[in-house]
Length: 262
Image 1 (cartoon, helix red, strand yellow):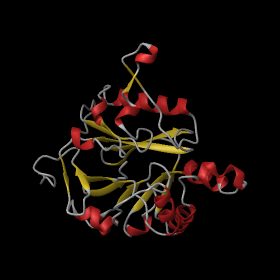
Image 2 (cartoon, helix red, strand yellow):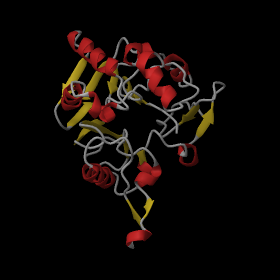
Image 3 (cartoon, helix red, strand yellow):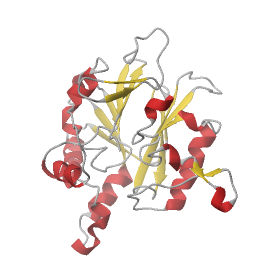
Image 4 (cartoon, helix red, strand yellow):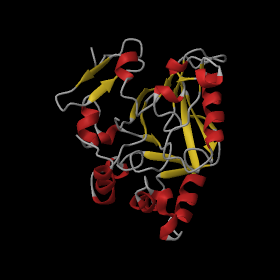
């Protein structure tokens, strides 16, 4: 299973959806437990797209698991957006007895501390619910009590029209693989059905409801929903392997822009 983050460029912004995990301290410990291999720091990964971490001005954190919220120290010029409820509830979970620690199996407590430090510097925006046009063409959507307590997903409207047709959804871990959206439904006599993923601390029902909201937004075209833990992205989008054995997939290329995979 790959561990990824998403780069958005346009309208004068360089933005990321999630920032991967940090291969140090408890993040390294979790990575070793999950048998993650071939970690590379953000400056190595982003160089494949002609970007350095200092270029990133905006980061959207879909949820606070270690593999999405780990490298926040690497982006000194970025403003971070995360759901307020996500951070508050994880802070509460960390106060619970050890016998309840299953809920923190994918959490690096250091990232919650760093969130407080960013707040003190005025570099993190705690949001409540949905936000439209947080940067041009980008909307944030809350999926409360789902994969995590305050998970959110990100939609990108490329045509920025009143009735847009060119929308992409970056799903965080609400959809981690294609099969979450397109599971064989023959067991209950339907062609396909939704299948919530693992490491969920909230409601599977709420995940399924969020999946349907995503699908309605893209006119039920599942190929416009991008799962960042999907090994098969290369089957749907132009992709290449770097000399570091990192896969770069190009979801949508702006008119006249240079391709970094072809």
